[in-house]
Image (cartoon, rainbow, N blue to C red):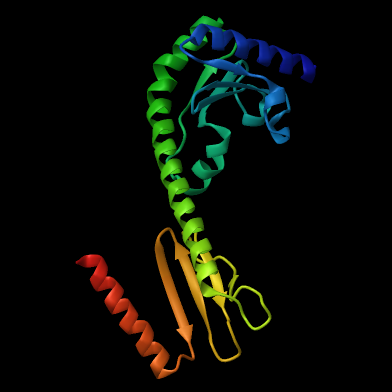
Length: 217
């Protein structure tokens, strides 16, 4: 019985995709991650937009009712769930209505909210990806610049991540007398070095003053 329901949902999803047109496509179960291949939900896609047809008792729907859930491409979904606080749009439609009628309800009630929602998630996702790429590039530069410790290992070693904003955290330990922490967030670097001698601290501060002056002039 469950299998029959699943097959009916998949067929309905194909028909709704055809009725929607304008780039909407049915998503085959085989192309979904294993955790989502239960066959009880139907998936539609168009660019960054996804629609999930959930029509079984897990959602306490009224008989015949189906939840049409708007969401975004799977690679952005975890990002959307974890960092974007705006709820994805959804509507309820009787799944026993003709596919063309269901498609019209989607166009009228769901897409006007889903389209800007997906665009907003894409913008934030791309912005974060660019930020993360800068973090990785800056981290590689610092690791190469920090040199080696007495054992021949990188003096800058990965440490645990801290805080809410994605960043890279390193432990700086080139020898037994000098140590510190480095946090890289995009192109912003937080550097804390302890046990510096006065001449070492003076050298670093003088270099920064010269470097900053050269950049601003």
